[in-house]
Amino acid sequence: AVAKGEALQALVERYAPHAVFMLGDDVSDAMAFRALRELREKGVTDGIAVAVKARPNVVINEVIEAADVVLGSPVEATRFLAALARRLATEPG
Image (cartoon, rainbow, N blue to C red; front, side):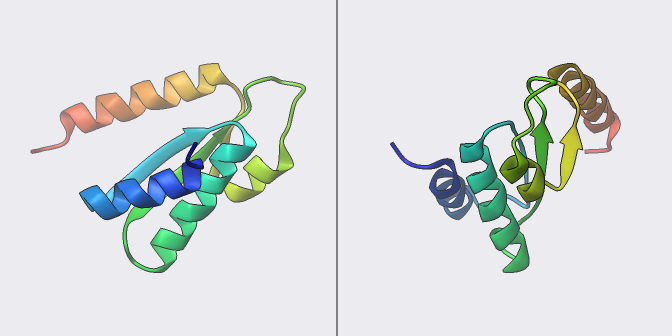
C-alpha cells in the first residue's frame, strides 16, 4: 500500500490543483500533512491540513504538530465542512 504522503504527492503531480484541502486524524494523515507542507514551501500548490480529534481522550501529537488547524471533534469537522460548502456555493464562478 502506498503511504498517504506519497499518494498526495502523486495526485498533486497528476492533477496540478491550485489548492489542496485535507482532513485527517491518524499518523498516516500526518505524513500527508507534511507532504502538503513541502509542496506549499516549493510553491507547487497551496492548501491546508486539518487535524480532527476523532476521540476526545486520544490526542496523537504527531498529527496535531503536522496540521495547520485542529478541530476538536468529528462534529466540528462536519460543521466546518458544511460552512465551507455554503461559502463555496455563494462564490462567484
